[in-house]
Length: 247
Image 1 (cartoon, helix red, strand yellow):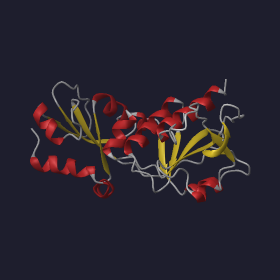
Image 2 (cartoon, helix red, strand yellow):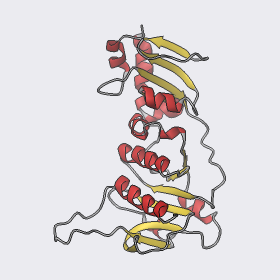
Image 3 (cartoon, helix red, strand yellow):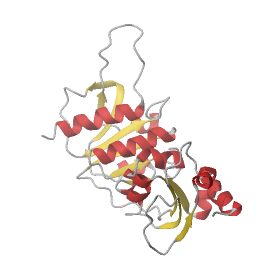
Image 4 (cartoon, one colour):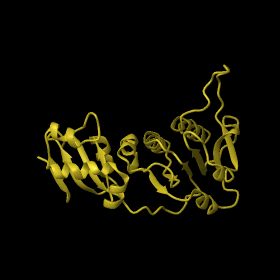
């Protein structure tokens, strides 16, 4: 059984201000919780008897499906909800010999979570976010990652300073309308791929840092073709082409 106060405490973590103050975030479902427990330390597990809870030094509360429904952020709760501790946001040294992603003002939680999942699929270990990008510990972002947050390091940094710290002529890619056809370009095995805001694209300040401009061509010749791709879809297309050309 779970108390009303405990439900209130968990539900309050939907707000970034509370997450930051408490240093906690929420994840739900056996797959997501199981993956995140490999990296993050749980403070609390709330679950039904159906879920086989591991033993550990955290608070464990067994609830009914109705109680889980009251505390869950999901329309259809999935056996377990976990409250994890947010680690210190200290990013590793910039891995200039790898391919990394930089997200410039991504606002939609679903897009951010999906991009992290895409990074995980294509073996990208570091995602750097501008301070204007949505909070990675938003419950909607966490769920959209489907556990990939356990394997992808996400850091919030000044992207211009990050790029300035890279070696001279370091490859900084960006998808822009004036870019070169990505399918005809020679792509490097390392570099930083910058993806921009859903509505405005890459900010003018950061565009100046892009030294290799790419374009995902549209094969629809009708005048009414879409203006752009969803940023998560564009990220998948871009990263897939980088990986394809590695072989």
